[in-house]
Length: 356
Image (tube, rainbow, N blue to C red; front, side, top):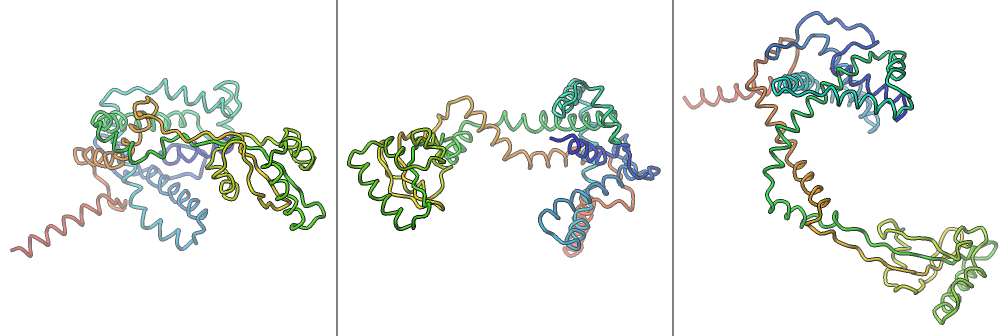
């Protein structure tokens, strides 16, 4: 990651957290929401909305979307910004209740980012951040919050899922995804390359077919490489050797040409842009299905099963935190959750009225 990209990434994270960075001043007076004993200020909200819009615009522009489409999507998603701020704060409060400490992890991450960007020590890195308009302490604070949120989800959501996974679920995932646990087959190939170099395609093709017949009749492959392959061809200096390849990485025409070959056999001529290629299959290593019992296989299975359940479980967990908390979102700050609850209440009220 380049230093400029790294700084941009940290600035975006800081802005999303409503922290002070060198940007246009934001009016921070006023309370947008109360979450238990903490508050979300107007400044927190305005900053989060601004950066959400910028990030949304960046992503949609990459997809070729027009400005009207971006504006419409922003208006649709804007109410989710307050919900994200509320949920993040609830997770931070829960981390405090659980007594989670992440200072060592914060320091380690800061050191790793500094090393990745070529800084000898953390002091030089933090000085560089200041020059980019980023407050190092704000960066630390933001990393701390993110780590706290992640650890709460890990302990309260992911670990219970992991502990509840049955062997049947593991085996079912393995059986349905065997392709992902298969070590691809490999082939070792050599070639003879006959360039066009002033000859017609028909002339070179006929020559290539005669050569294939000679090879299949017992002609020496290495001698044929020396006599026919262009000196500028890299494989010529290696007696025709191309190396080892995964079957999935081969071009379709080459894969088709060697599909039924046995080690030592040569293919029919393959037409390339600048000549004809004759390929010899030197060795074939079949695909191997890794065993279910292998520790790495079990790790991958567990991670995937947890991931399949994680999003829904996280949503339910955060919803429960919110239901058990005191959350008061002030007028003028739209919330998708609040709008959803209001709509649900209105629907229930209407149904009850109709029932009477």
